[in-house]
Length: 356
Image (tube, rainbow, N blue to C red; front, side, top):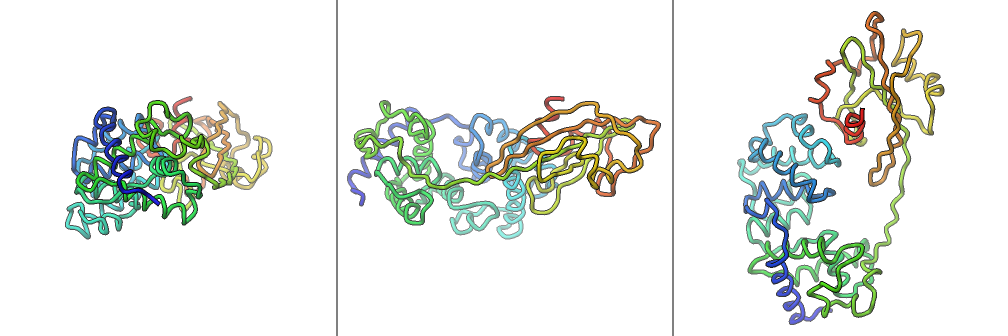
């Protein structure tokens, strides 16, 4: 399927391009596997421009595996606040503990050991192994799928087992085995800067003469992505309750989104509901038990999009007069208003706090 001589030319052109056009990123100034790992996890589902600041803050707070492993989970989640996909933060914390327990606090160098760590998949393991330890493993992420599919005119879906297998084999055949880390960074940058999903810069592409998609005028059709994402609509009603200088929070548990993050008391309804309908629900009666009347000080609607969920949210700020006692249900606890910024919250709650 691939021509070894042509592959070698593609690899050479990519490395030459990277030497001139590659991005200047702080985590590329090190071969420390810990720092490379943190940067790769942060950049999952996160743009570089946003991830850079988080990377600096994270490394400053937790400069090594031991400091991260010894941290409280709330500390890690708070530092992650605003990045979203909080499973990444919990996994990073758990993996740091694994390194301390299973590898004597030394980040493992073998690919098989790296991929055994919590939250590290094939892509991240290949990135760490190649960049930090010069191991010959090709990274295969969305950028690489796109570049390879276009270069070699692959019409199989990138979500099919056959398509994935073919692209991974080609990616491995393109790898520069003398400098795998540099090649991996080159192809990632090429996909991010030149061979982009929309409006790729084909006229500035150094691989134009080797691209089957360009030759066949099929760049816009490749890669083939036939995955259909089903979006679930959810309806959240948050109550920002204030009483005698206090605010009330609860912690999310279970396996739902935003596990172990904090939030205002929440009522979720199966359909959209206004305040009049909410007042008739049992959770509302339990939340405001003993209060004869509730007045809304502020109301805000926010729609928050996740990969598979659309969260339609109404925030109600309720100020209860100080001379009226308030005792919420047991899972809800009070903090002083000034303490609110100390608690890790979801990006949705963070958006609300930015606005009010």
